[in-house]
Length: 150
Image (cartoon, rainbow, N blue to C red; front, side, top):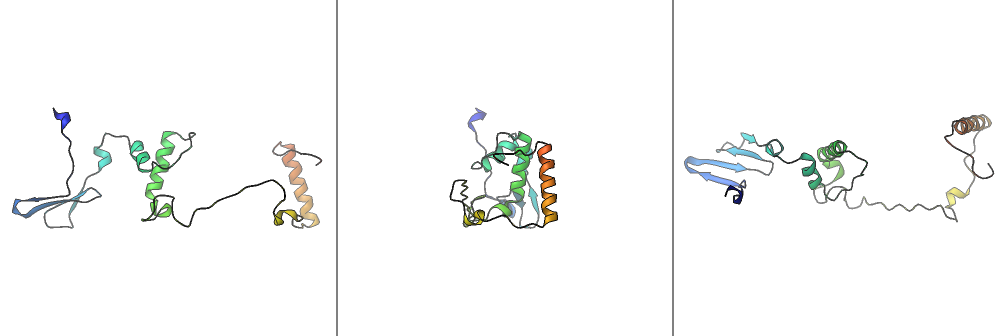
């Protein structure tokens, strides 16, 4: 029978003897006419839900790599919530700020862009020797390899 009851926190209750209870959206409760004295109600401490599920629900449009562990996702989501002003504005949801959408087009097909057609920047003889020495070291460590006629 108790399963049929659903509890909700209501916005304002007016009690006799001018004792008012106000419930703000941040779960701070004010009792009486003194608006400066607030009592906070931490939902996450009293809730039996998983904080990761709550944060994932809040950022449900976000896509996360499957390589992240639950702890890493939780840490990332907490950082996003803490720094929301850096990633969103009031009028737009997180990461959907108008004017900040960027479309990247990566192409390696010919014809190359004009800046890539010209010769590389000139280097002095000493700099070219150091660059060649560094390239040979990287090749010896198998970081890079020759392709084609190089």
